[in-house]
Length: 89
View 1 (cartoon, rainbow, N blue to C red):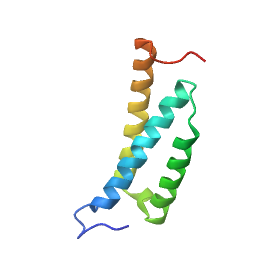
View 2: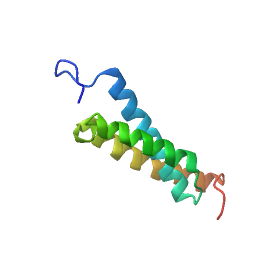
View 3: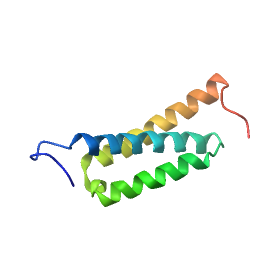
View 4: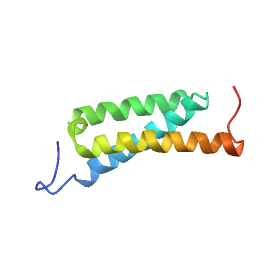
């Protein structure tokens, strides 16, 4: 893990985790709405490999990102359904 001086993550690690959270949220929403986009799956997979290489899966920031992604995806999918913007499959 590449933390700076024990004071948290460096900027690059934070960006990687933020990208992972965004992609995870996007994929979960797509899944709930019955819409799959292979490019999102591919990018999420590549990002997860980087996270694994950098040892970020054991960080509290990673765990928090996973929880936030799930919560936000549930909320966004329900919002899309309620607003009628979700495609019916």
